[in-house]
Image (cartoon, rainbow, N blue to C red; front, side, top):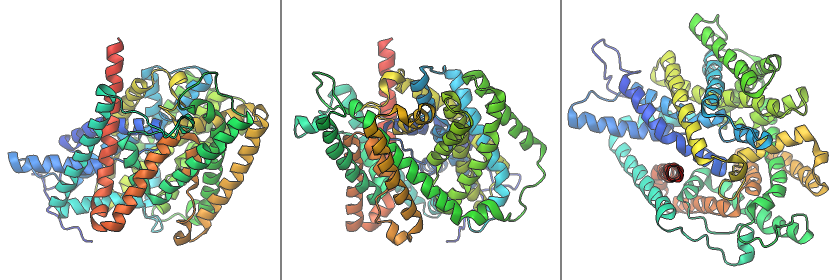
Amino acid sequence: MDLTLPSHKGLDGTQRELSPRAVLTGIVLGILLTPSNVYAGLKIGWSYNMSIIALLIGYGVWQGLGRRQGQQPWTLLESNINQTVASAAASIISGGLVAPIPAYTLLTGQQLDPLPMIAWVFSVSFLGIWIAWYLRPSLLNDDGLKFPEGMATLETLRHIYNHGAEAATRLKVLLGTAVLSGLVKGFDTFIWSIPRWAPNAALQRLTFTLDPSLLLVGFGAIIGIRVGVTLLLGALLAWGGLAPWLLNQGLVVLPPGSNGPQFAALVEWLLWPGVSLMVCSTLASLGLRLWALRASVFGRRTGSGWRRPALAPALCFLLAVTLVIGLQAALFGIEPGMALLTIPLAICLAAVAARVVGATGIPPIGAIGQLSQLSFGIIAPGQVPINLMSANTAGGAAGQCTDLMNDFKVGLAIGATPKKQVIAQCLGIFVGSIVGVLVYMTLIPDPQHMLLTQAWPAPAVATWKAVAETLTQGLDSLSPSIRWAIAIAALIGVLLGALDSLLPARRARYLPSSAALGLAFILPASIALMMGLGAVLTWLASRRWPGATERFAITAAAGLIAGESITGVGASLWAMLVQR
């Protein structure tokens, strides 16, 4: 589709791009949207790309103001800067806030103060930005890398600028579902706690209860029918099948007089096969994808390749490296020589992640984190800080690298200035680091007692913690039943991961999602049921009203996620203020 747009040029003859209003709009939206991903990451281990939400809101606000108050038109390039800042802020959770940082606290009992945590999250994200800068020439000139997520953002940009009325309609849907979700969460929190109903006491004990969360329904709408149905099957297998067997065999013993859902006791056993399945399937799939992409990952260099570095980017990259190494030594007691080893690993794994995202649209951040943990488990066995926080460097850098590469792909198509996009990304991670850390500490003031519970399952935290424990203490520290479960789940994970990569797409879609199957072992059944419900309802709607579902389903789901999560963060902040 051709993009025919007015130029909206300023007095100097150029189209406005890194304007104050574009940056400020992105910052405000980043402040509003970052809590959603922190909340969702701690709740279900997944996050949502906020680029399209930022595009819709920014366009709606400034086009409306332009008509009413005679403001200059909101340009295409300003929209791009706005979404770059906002999405960079919201993607800050890849810096460790919902995985290695909480896992470090659970294993060591040490909680970082706000300022050091902000500095750490910013530093690993900042490193990823400059890795992306140097990867940009070779990756963008490779015709085999389509960057599907960036293309989705590009198509949304094209659509709203060619069909402004459609953008306004979608914005109304977004805001309407956000208000609805926020009202339900507010009612449940402040007015009357909606009962967590279960058919009987036995099912309630196994976590099969009603969870009145529209956020979960929204995520179900986004993940699709394959993942949603797999979550349902996984919940039935883990919590409806294995959990009762564990209780009957005495492999899990509940505390005397315990009532209600027994998530904490059961998940201590169930998380091991769940983590094993997820990690092994992801690594198997990643390995096969890299083998298929070996020519582009390890082979030819296209276009200009690596050029002689300009001074400013080189200095910024050096600053990022210095920050990461210095903070590892100062905050976690990691020797500078060991900390230095994280840099080449982060560069290599971020490059791999960017290639995989460019080819498939699937960000393998979880696999990158576990690969890093395995690497440092071999280099420095038995050392929890190195295993978690050095691996955090690679995971955080890869997360921001892939996010910016998608933005670079959009920018290339619309004639954006790469240097201005980098400035926008840096501003985004600066804002996101502050907001994300403050939200995390507001939601989880006591990680030792709040995480890995029914209220905050934190599956990503459970995964990083389990891998670190296994690598530092060894499998011998686990009971024989858990070791058997890990081995069986690993075999199933490798098989599913291999089939998912080797089978044609039309056949692979009928396989269960290995990530969702493993996740169902770590999430309470109540969460899996609600997400599965959202996926099934959306699929049914798509069969009955395909056009309307294609237009509004994702937008409505994003509103449900944002409304509940922002209200949930506000409720936690209010509770903290009242207690003081």
